[in-house]
Image (cartoon, rainbow, N blue to C red; front, side, top):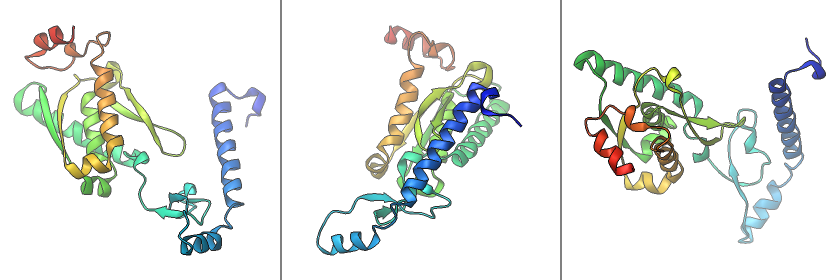
Length: 212
């Protein structure tokens, strides 16, 4: 075992994060005395602060109790579990196309439905990101803070261009996820990144001229 002084900077950062999280959870537990006050406030047509509702052991963000809870938090979409499934779907798609056609796909299309995302928690969004060679960035509590590009050496294939069609309800319910996909696109098309060398499209020379 190590003591704190001999720990690496990464280990110290991890320890600091879980310590601060533990303090936050303890403080929120101490504030779980608002249920009756919130009920009376609601009966008096008052405003009740919103918050996620869940088992506080599985989802400590449900604390403190006594808030106007909701059952779904889009800021955690895609989840880590959905990311694993989405990656597998993308790999299967690319490998199947390569085996059948002898080359990587130039482009693929995906449809995003709000009700489906509510069920699978971001599998299709993960598939879209991974096809482009990007991935979500989560914080310690599972919130998606943004996206980052996957290095070529790790991706080991070209970045695939995608066409995303989103339903009207999806547009209204999941603007954060649309923003994540757009953020990935904006990162990829930066001139210094040279996206046109990686998306295998017969039209990339014209696209390069347009971007310049």
